[in-house]
Image 1 (cartoon, rainbow, N blue to C red):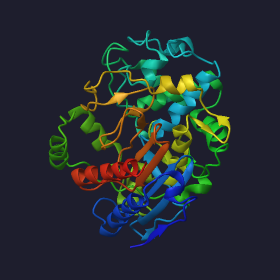
Image 2: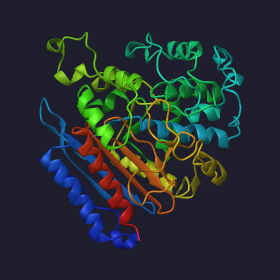
Image 3: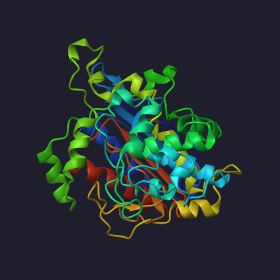
Length: 409
């Protein structure tokens, strides 16, 4: 099985990491690539104190023609995109363009409908508005139409009073955030991210809205339609009660059942998130495309207090606010039925041993892991083609995070 490991910028010892544990982390990943039990292809990158210590990958990026995962390969980030979008909003706040408790309708008057009149920007970033799923007519064919996405968000009636509770907004988080960014700044989230974050950090493999010229670098995703039995068994093992509405949404998200696979250039195109036209849409909630190396570098900047090489991306006060919990430990998310702790756009904590609420970032559908740890000045990014064996994958990805945290002295 194809595998690569690029040279690190520094040795583990130079950044106070245990070389043996770093090697164990590398070998754990390599074994998973070789066994092909959890994914077809993947990348893993780790930074500490702003220096890259691991950069490896392997497996297959496209099964239909055996394209291997290479250093320049990029993956669909799914909801890990939300962590990138969050930084963009916080940067606008630091520029004095809005206050967190401002009502969304102050900048987007049409949003003040059907019980959303009091919804604030803080409610949006913390998944507290109640615009969780739907409407049904906002299908993938309309995701690229900003006006239609905005209209859908305006017309929705929230499931609860904004601010009352947290409940994950899988795609609507991004539709709301993107429209608000355009009204605040004039640029959509993809353009802002490219100009204000990716270019200054020299990230040439991280996009919210992929240029057509980069399409050949994108790995396919292979998460099959969710099997209710296996997912429920995995959920039960993790102490989770699945939400049926959210399960139905996830089951319908990837696949276009109206397409005849025989008409496609390659079979992977039946999955909506493998299509070039989807990749080009600015979807701040789930459409990002990137490499593990670049998203780990992004979070390396965050782990250094949101600054890089003397350039501040966030003030200390804004970063502190961004990772202040918006709910209490043990609160059950009304969409996911999970005890998630939300900050402002980032999820706080991790189930891996050694993680704290200052270990934060955003996971993605299919098993993407993207984290910063402020106390360790550590970042880790694991991207893959889609999880198989849900419970086994969950345990494997937790092990990656535990080893990265444990390696820090």
